[in-house]
Length: 159
Image 1 (cartoon, one colour):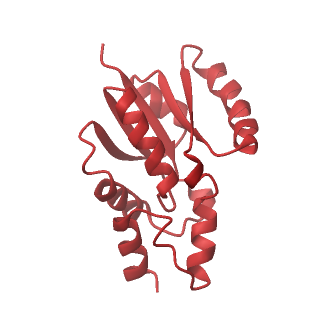
Image 2 (cartoon, helix red, strand yellow):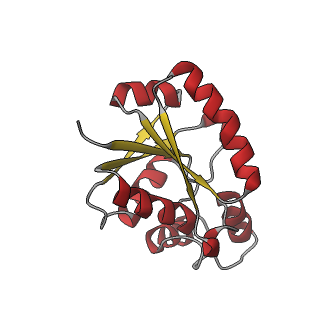
Image 3 (cartoon, rainbow, N blue to C red):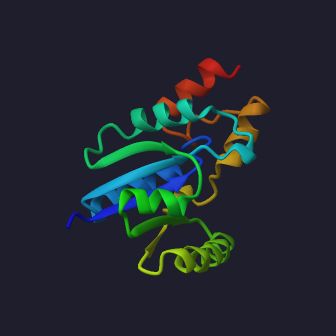
């Protein structure tokens, strides 16, 4: 059986913190799917297509990583992919508290699901997609916070 893990998120936008988690997950698992959530209730800054394309560009060197979009419940997506490993990134204790709550919900629907928490490297622990969007909207420099393909997309299309 292949060792498949899914790393889900809205990735609006994909940050260097996400990139850190994905690179590390790719060294632990045979295959990693970066599952980009449609998340209509979040009113995203980037379209689903932009988030998928920029993630594919940023992750192109990682041969065992695939980027896919999905809509609906993550549990249904995991069942469809026949995946029983979920990767989640943690920046701090607040993230842990939130993820611990989600773990209980996920296991209620998929008892066999294994959830792997990866701590973001300390140099990325302050980065969030929300912070990146706020800095960009107010004219700040986000070039050190996101991978180059994401930076290029945002600065060329969202002026």
